[in-house]
Figure 1 (cartoon, rainbow, N blue to C red):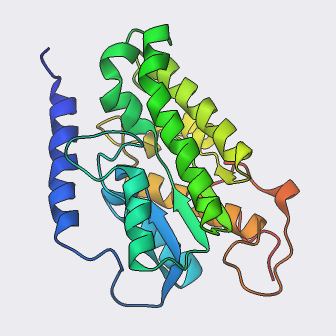
Figure 2 (figure 1 turned 135 degrees about the vertical axis):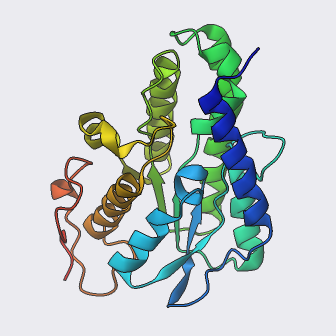
Length: 255
């Protein structure tokens, strides 16, 4: 099957980022590092690093980063799967209070592409994605057993590829159910990205720098609303969270 030009560019970027990732430490240098907060996931976090930069601006801290471009929840031949990223973080320092993550997009876009690109969520597509959902379920359960207090999962916004849209929406909804099952906190960027397609780059997959800053603000607003990593004096205000409808609404519920 001949790959489209955009797909080749995406794959090249992902593999290049993986090589860079393999040569650098996961604990960021400079600034105040909050080692009890860990980021895992894929290129939404790892490719440009702009989400990390904006989170540092908002929080005044750097978080431990293990995200890898091209990573899947299950499988993948070239990069560290997301559950293994978490395992690596635990080996480095098991005192983890909060995990901020995404995951599942590459399981659809790469791992299950042949079965899930027909414009419908077929039985074959569901079978192909089942191991990824099982891996996410097991990962969330392990985090809880390990004593992780806060699981903060950022769901997906990518729906521009019409042939893959049903599969992405299926994965989006199933991941939301798993987050709720394990008492995690959901960051939902889809409404604001649906309304602002300019936040997605020309590859039709990754956020622009502006889009990355919007995602970081949505994450930070969610942390504030749930008093996650906010220090003493924070009053939860989860009923008034922005739920992805405002890219920068300001502080919510924390003193």
